[in-house]
Image (cartoon, rainbow, N blue to C red):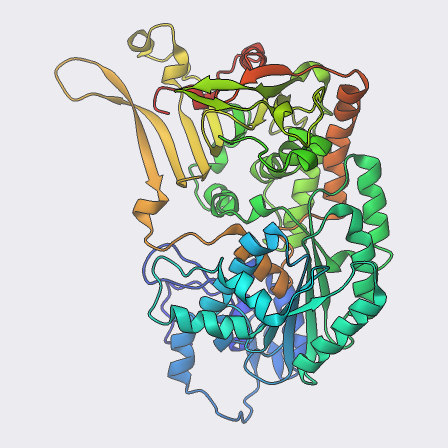
Length: 591
């Protein structure tokens, strides 16, 4: 290992040449080992599958010299460790050999004819294949009630496949190779007989190898349990792992969520269930812990002593548009706030985990959720968009949707003030805002710091002290960026202050396109990395915060405040923020 320079950091999961994905931000470009598996788990995994491994006194792991067929020269091995190779050229730490003939991965997309499968899942799987992250032996099956041939599935999937902006010349060739791995089986979601027939097809493609099977449930929640029951009893792997990805919504309240979890656990163990929240796979959300825990300037400031408030803002510039029937059953609070924004909040506010192991991270998130006050009705504002004409164009109201009742009180907008009762965050308001049919499309985290005590330059800002406040903005989407607002002197003989940005704009800094969240999460599920998936006790704690509020809103039939389509939302949201001496950060002139 002398060929490795002292500046090159290799985790203990790189032992025995079993490196995984490594990601560094600056040249040379690295591929990061599998999502930060702890040394303990990595060594344990390899200890089982590699009996020649020896654990040294200093914690390093080495192997006894053995004769290996097609032995790789040491200098070539070192080069691979430093530069990184695709998973297709490496051994996977989850327990199967991607270069050998010992195992295969079969991915079944249940609900393959739906929009999510066509627009997100199949394109994400192709992107992983295109970048070399899928194993050597893999098969993809679509499963749905629609009658379809393999050729018809491939034709449907091919319409949504694209290559990266920095695509290589073999894009069309890669597409053809990928589509040849895609097959289809028609069946009912509650039919064990149909899933047994799927099992026979999977076995035929697996060719006697160790079979690892991943089922992605891209179907309505009311048929989750039937599909899981049939897949578990009739199509699970007999000699490898079986995992199931479950899409939200995970119930409507604490009771229905607990019932779903109980039903799932009749057929699956908790470590087989991957509850997906695609926002946790977004680049800027995953970067939260890196930004905080690997930069000394941020962690000391990450508390009530320096932070005045935190804002989590989600806005879309379009309405329900075709999803009215589904949305009316859940509303914006269940659809966005209880999962996406609350998960981001937990990641933002958690204490430093013991390690980057999935369970250590999820333990800290649960502690945050359990420390939060249940939401009160007086700390929430709801709204619903109404019709509006702008520039000669008429925009419909929410209740103009034919699938929505004319007297629906379902909120399409909500703002809330949440509090974490622990030593780090006591008294700091966490303001959430989520809405549809607003003036812009944006998801961002805004951290507003406290005013400078005895600021010498207050007179230069007048009475608007908010202009003098530092603010850290993490723009999750679109046009990903991280920027810090600071006060700066304008060049010249006078003393005029200006508010400037220290700006990390991802499109300008990094030439490579940011992967879609589904790519990251699918790859994690294949590798068995659970850090970005939701554990059952996380789900229970999240619902415990929102269920009392949701029941009160529905029992009292609270009428939402109406706001015009394309506006900034209800006025009540500004009064809510003002109650805690906060101004929404997305209303500034720089926006």
